[in-house]
Length: 100
Image (cartoon, rainbow, N blue to C red; front, side, top):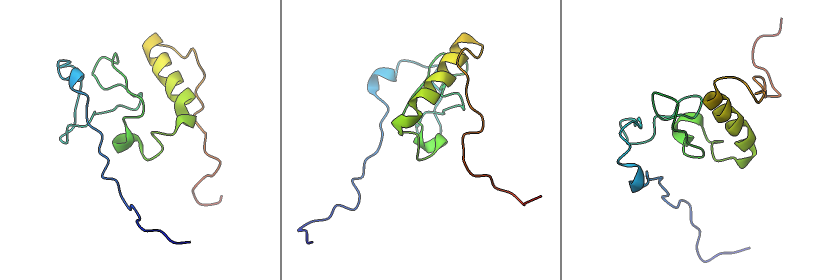
């Protein structure tokens, strides 16, 4: 197999949409990225949430659409103030540590 060109990196960089600029309650870090809390909120009152915009805080799996149901459950439970949807706390198949 051969190729004339290979693209190694696209230089993609997320930019906050300009229509959010008037919302002063949004928290940003020093790099003007959303300061995303564990529950996906980006404000101090848990009223503004993001999805797929938290790779810098939640890791490389943030854009994974397979986690959409989990993210939705966390956000809805936060909005409601109680756990309407159950959220698994142990979702990894592996465990790390010293054998007992």
